[in-house]
Length: 372
Image 1 (tube, rainbow, N blue to C red):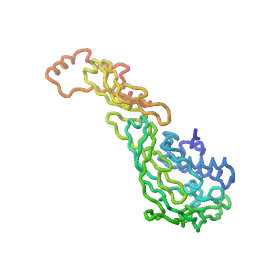
Image 2: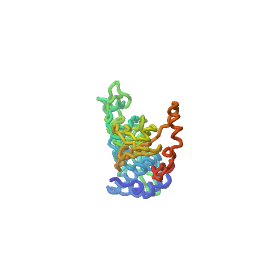
Image 3: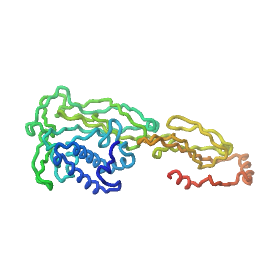
């Protein structure tokens, strides 16, 4: 089980943005590779702190994490950073360098900044529309994606400016002493390589636009607006870089008769006066097909029938929600002469007089019970 992001940074769930940034800076300085050369434990703690900060510093990601935990960023090979399969040290320096008060990479690169910077291709984003049934049961979708790939026959030479390192370094005096800082090479864009040969139909970076069918596994219980990630299905990076990711935003399509509230579903069932008085059975929709339910004689309008585990599975694995059937007794708007005479005759009958019992709760009491 992954460590809690708040525990990693040593803060409470109600911490402000400034407190989150301050806590991350403290942890990053404490476990920075330049201060702990060769210490794999410190390196791991440094990465975990960066992972926690990446989520908690983003209001949208923080809200999803607070509601769904780590599951909010899983799916399609998910993990770090909203589904990311793990950041390398260069990713962390380039993304959070400003935390340390310096430009570019902040402190030096991993292990003193001597290694080649790994370039990552740009991410792609798609919106995937899902029905309530697909969300409830989980589904595998195949979509066509236009992505850039390195053209066959493209070759690269080592950049003469950075000698293949992908970055240029300098020594800087900081509050921690003399630190080696780095920035991407302007000549090669940080890849450490320059185009040698490329096909005539490739662009200036030796890339071609292609269309590829990508399979995406959607776990049961996803919510509208959640973002999943398919690792390595974004655009390729020039040279020996790694491909970007495909970010999949979930859009929940409205259902004809069901409405969703968290993991619970709601269904409005309308019954006639005669069905309410005599009792009946009705067929209703669920996300797994139609089911028949029994309406007891004398059912009151506003009665809520709970069908256990007929809702949406929890994405955190905490069971399945319920289907709440709201009974509404339909009052006819027009009556024949005979029908009017019948109701006029019954208006004085004792059985037609309202006699609410203790179990016939008011609307507000029912709402309160639903949310308690």
